[in-house]
Image 1 (cartoon, rainbow, N blue to C red):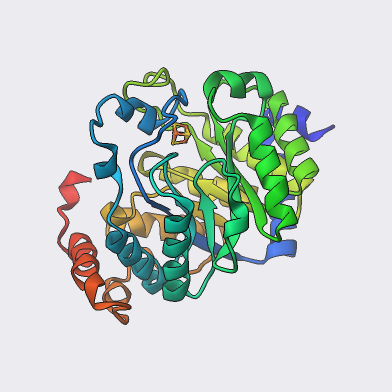
Image 2 (tube, protein in one colour):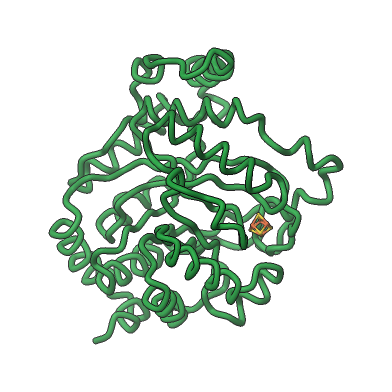
Length: 335
Ligand code: SF4
């Protein structure tokens, strides 16, 4: 039976078993923690139907103030280094930082973490400006069925995303896409995503499940079922054994982590890091990884690691201190 039929027929256990074998054989037993570092809370497009920034757009009167201070971005990069996490990518809406600024930020983060940075900052035709500070380019596809995509993300065309990714490949960058499950797709639609992975030569996919934001049309929509999410990831792992797969899980869905790891995830993302670090929620992530039979790279609980490390630049000291204090002093009841 083909993989799509297995998703449709709820043969998730079979998919998980096969995907898990493939993952262990090809990738080993390591699981990474990934941190998307946001640069801004503003997006010029602001019309994707599910997006928090679309819901915020009418409320933000001064877009410049929705830009983060770069010092706080660099402080966050230093903390990910201390915790043994990866910077998954630099993310943000359209129109907040220009290419020169993004390049400078990426260069500084590269110098802090020792790893080149992925970008997820929208469609651009200025990729030639980037160099060895950039590892790869992400196309925020979200939903690969072209008809749905047009409806849900009217201002970022699939054709333009694909064109950008193809150019990224020609320039020697790696290529990744983001996919959100629960936007109204059917199990058959997975074929659009697979065609894209195949056709464009995608190296990494980040899966998310719908996070129904207030003031969007998905506000009252349920998140996708955990075993549907795991089934899609597992079928993708079986179809693309060497693909890097990152899966996103929000605080209210931590029990998804075990099944997603068995389905083939290499890394975990989408956590409210500073709320969770060092708490029972962070510990829960570590336990999920342990009980899936994997070894976690980095820590979600080691407060000493968080406090230990060079200050890469004196200006960053108060920003680093603020994040560290937030982790140490937070009130668990507020989570
Ligand atoms: S382009 Fe990205 S940030 Fe902007 S509204 Fe769409 S999903 Fe949100």
